[in-house]
Image 1 (cartoon, rainbow, N blue to C red):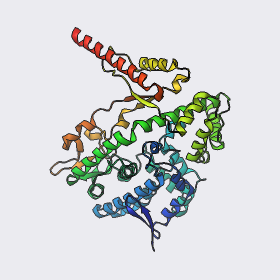
Image 2 (cartoon, rainbow, N blue to C red):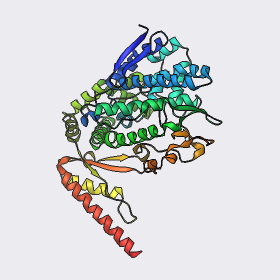
Image 3 (cartoon, helix red, strand yellow):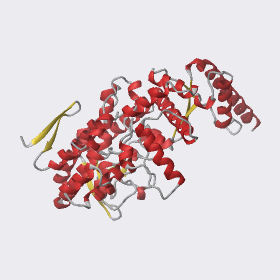
Length: 467
């Protein structure tokens, strides 16, 4: 056989040409890519959806599969076949390794480690110690790893726009795979849209500023709409699920408390890999000339390392750290309390509300310190939006807007202007605040929140009456 056939629950078969793309097989077998088998695609969502045990490697292979199809379609519609062919290899490499920099539980550990996973992906690509780097140099040349790193770098605009936006845009191969894959494994059922039509109806639009950009044909309008609504439902029901977010905040709180103790010279029973990483990080903080944690130190922190660490913390002498660790291991989740209404100038702000909630916790000695039991989750606006396009037409591209070619129009049109029913999904995003507290005081917390809402309503009434 001249193809490597991989079974996949979403596409049935994923095929890689072993003669034409032998380098892709070698990359797949590298330890840095194989590590993705041990990273949950949806972080700790398995604590909410028991079936959400799929991993980053399966998703990365899915992105490769869709990218292959997109490139075939591009070859059919492009008049510049040589340019398309020239971009094929770096785009496929980026499709496979775009997530190789993820830490344990995917996005969960980005705030814990204080750095975006894409930064680590680029570091892995450029480090001569990694097999990914060595394989790319062996099959191509010494400049190739940097070219792929520039494709992945969202702030780099030197690479062709159509290549970058196949990988990272408002409608890219990454999203097309994870929406459907996450829907399948969670059982949520919201990831159904006409992905095949989306893959086979995009066109190349020649723009004087951005060059060759990607737009969609007018006949794909309903498929685009279906996709946007799918994103909306998946955000609301899966990615921002209150139970999942609560456990994420719990892990962040444990990590921050342990790091505080470590910086103070106290023993926090660290696993060797985490200790090595923190030592290097602490040295870099105190001495800018010292190197930061290495790629090798970063890759050594695996999910099983973190779970072992949390298990170890269940026996720590600090009551709050051990309590949260035990709650996480036994899935004893915190209760979510929505923030009160702060929609008028006379209402108290979040700081006052948090003080009141902390006081409620402070009255119970078992919840000390209170900040470990009052976890704030700020869901930032733009991340809460399933689709939020650039408003200025002259600044729109496939990266920040989904645009459609309409017969008789000189320029592509942003999709929500063609489908008014999408407008509610594209309004200016607002930040949402949730608070997580022990379930033991859930009723008191809800009562407190209701009292604050009544005060806000009264103040609003008084203000309106005075006016």
